Image 1 (cartoon, rainbow, N blue to C red):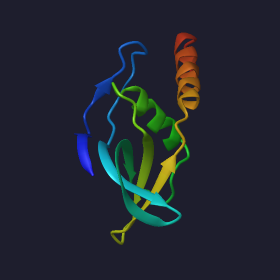
Image 2 (cartoon, helix red, strand yellow):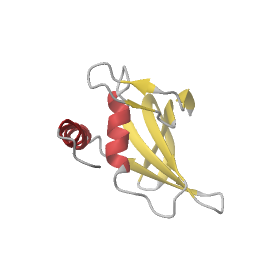
Image 3 (cartoon, rainbow, N blue to C red):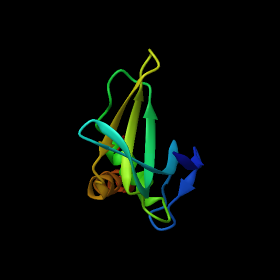
Length: 117
């Protein structure tokens, strides 16, 4: 894995939100049916790392928001849950831009209407 960014703050010029993805990079390694292999074709990956016991499903919206911050969208979105024993669990997430934009719109609506969060 070759990292292009590590915890670099980014901002969206149109939607006026910001975020700091944990990692973004390129790799040629793929996993298919539990087997890891070099496919020889580089692809871009966005990674969010967590050290929680369970993974919050909201990470899918968070990764989609980070993906929109990229000049060139990532090909895959991963969360990596770091375990206390030094191992990790990697999850590949669907690119769910609609989910992120729905959350963003609700946030903006509540803000405009002075509703508490």
